Amino acid sequence: MSDIVECHSGYEYAERPLAVHWQGERLEVKEILERWRIPGEKRFRVRTQDDQIFELCYHELDDLWRVHQL
Image (tube, rainbow, N blue to C red; front, side, top):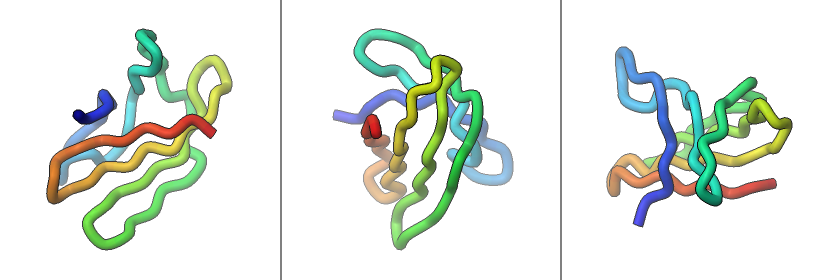
């Protein structure tokens, strides 16, 4: 089962995360701290409006998001 991440998609899917759903709450992304790619994945480290830090991983082949609180 995929975690829920809302994202902006323009030229390609998942260009920029906008919000993450975590423990029943929708948390808006305030800032993208870091972004990188590894084969088959896009990864983002983000800060939400309430100053929580998350790592968001989009697995392109499986079309799945994984969310990890840091």
